Amino acid sequence: MGCTNSTPGGGPGARPVQSPAAEQTRQIELPDVQWEINKEWSEIMEAEWKNAFESGNAKKFRASFQPFLDFTVRKWLNNAEPACAKAGTIEDMGETTLCVGGRKSKYPAKTILTLDDDFTGVIYSATMIIAPPLKGKGADEPWMKAGAALHTEELREAKRHMLTLFTLMLEENANIKHALIHVFMGADLVSCKFSTATNEPTITMLPHQDKPNEQFVSGNEDLRQTAISDPENLPVQFPSLMFTAAYQRAEREYPGCTTWDEGEFPFTVDGVPYQYPTRLLVARDFNKMSERVDSTFFKVVTFKDPNDSSEAFLVRNSDPDKDPGGIVCVTLILGIDPKVIWPKCGDYTDSPAIAAAEKALHEHVKTLHKNGKVRACAMRVCIGTERKNSKFVGDVGTIAPEAMGPEFQTVPESNRRQYTDLSAFLLSLKEQPKHELFESESHFQAIKEHMRTRAQENPEFFNAIVPQVAVMSAKHFLSTNFPGCEVVDEGEFPATLPDGTEMKIADTRLILAKDPKQEPKSIVAALHIVPNPTGGEDTFMVKGKKNWLESKEMKGAEYALLELLKKLYAEGKVSEVDCMAQVMMETDATIYQFVEGDKFIDYSDERMAQFKWY
Image (tube, rainbow, N blue to C red; front, side, top):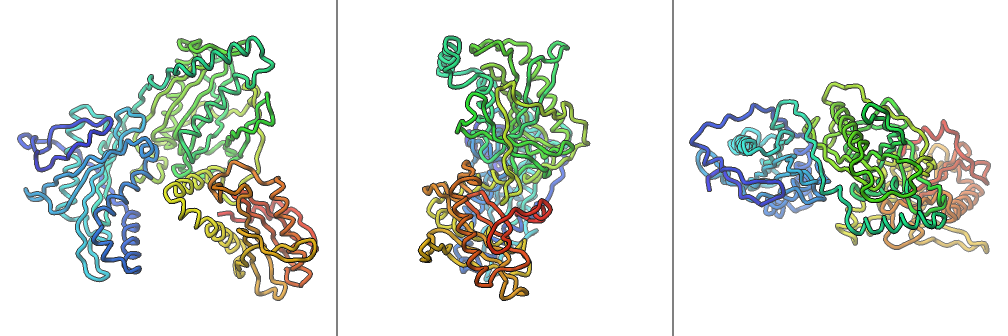
């Protein structure tokens, strides 16, 4: 192989290209690209080195730097494209032989390709990692300083190598028009867009995802026959099942994301407005949102069984003039003739409505992309038992993976939100209380998924730190909202039994905020932390399905806190000005004002708005 060849790893969608070395007999014109320096990466690496040195692990860090760099870069790429990481389409292409001055580079290098998670062949990025050995002395480690690699021959040749590789891949008709190039070397990272033009999005149809399997067809036919012969005893009705199935698929395939109700989606079929109800659902990744919006959280309730214990929730944007972006999946649900009790599989396969809806949805997502609200997302149209699946991939708005941000000139969005009720789907929405510990439902789901992942990676460590995380969160909340006060961890919550006996409740915590200016009546806030009452593995910030706000467990914890504050008040330790009382149970929280030495009352809306929850 030639000096600048990469060892192919046979990843999905990747095709071997002719070696750049073999192309030296002809001149290859490389594109003029704009390289950007990622300062955040440098800060991360400098902090890692500082931590290693200060903890006495400098020697170990230097010795294991290459695998450490590989691991950290891979983690960075996984964070940039979590769906690709989950699908296994971030492919290690093996060792890369990099030439510097006509000779093989003395530093090891490797290449990684990130391909679309739906196996469309679209390449999201190509990454080269160069790991120079760390041979500094003491605290001085040149390669762990920002900017050390920026003007080296190795970095310059790595840029040229990657541009050459992409140019050859383009000649082989690889879809790299939306791709980024990243080069990591020590504490430096530079990135560029390979194509400097504004490219048309790539929309790929996914027919292999459309066809239902035999088990689905058989099960649907059984339900259809039951619906016709004995509709009263049918456990579920088709419109509600179709709707919730679409929601549950998005929740299952995009863990940590929230599903938003975007309202009606009007479109025409052969020039005539579609006559039945429609609904647009959008799955959003909190970490990719370009702006924060006020939102409302709803539980989905079925007409057939209002007490159905299955959990389905939707979020609505409360600000019609804003769009938070972060879209990873768009699902358009088309209602059908209500006279059809239960459709057969295949009834709508050739329906003009599904083709028209798909076209309208594609145009809508294109508009969202131009407004910087989506980079890549799944697109689905559902009617009857039929599904049409496609994938949208567009140019990135910014090179940094953390947020896309609107780069294009904003254009008016068609099909603005129109929120009609869901009665056509035999569903209703029940508004849920706002999260008290988190910015929003989207924020909560993102953190919950992060903690769930950490728990899977290291369950023993996670279970050990859960109580500490809860205490840290409580202390942060009190410190933020009661500045100048002393925040004290009083240990396990002290309860008084009816006979007057005092005891500590295991696994609970009492955190107090004390204002030194009000001594001795200094307690201005009391926070009672209660673990998940169900026990087991469902702990703080992991489960989140159960709502504890009106539960008997929450009421019991509130009663215990009230009794404690009454006792402390009688002892002259509670503020006469104001005392906040809060119970934190798993991810839910209640908050009251303790008044007159013996009762809780709700704070005013104005006071509640002043609390900072994160």
